Image (cartoon, rainbow, N blue to C red; front, side):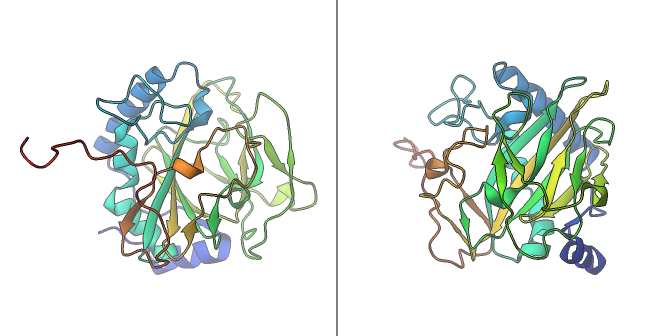
Length: 285
């Protein structure tokens, strides 16, 4: 069983992020690289930085390669299996508690030389979770360096539990179209989270973070796995930025999974968005 060390938990609490000692095994990284190739092949018309809900295949029979998942992407099941990985879930439980819900997965693949910028932002600005409390596990499938646009964070910016104003930018060359308004932070305080393939970082929902454009010769890919404590509720009626994020989402039909513990809130809907059981399934018919 994977566990965060006491020092790692203390770092996360203080700084709002941590890079655990744990790593995804090399064979699993290779498997996920193959899944990434399949995901890119299934989605030639989608910017590779915007592969939202990559863990969701289309509803219905078959592999789901022929239709999108309702959010514009043809997903690959390997990403759902990664998000349900027991070790990753246990690491996340170390900072949000033992009742854990998986609710999202976004693949950020920045092509060499022309990978999009992710503006400085806070995740909580986008998400319909109340009370607002989540953890993102960002898993590197390829080297993530300052040169190719690694994740950057403002340490300690989560501590006040405050969402700062964001401004909309109507630009085609951004991963997200919402940027923190000036005055919320000092970019000079930023820390670069450089990761090798198989490493991951965890960060808090209030953390101010972003990533520069990739102007290097090396592609950069990470998988952002989204978890929430089951004491919170995935409020499907909410659409926090009303379609202005630059990424198509359908929170009303987004499936979620209880991956550890129990639904402490008693209000989360674990049926919406899931495939209905096929007639005769499990009966031998």
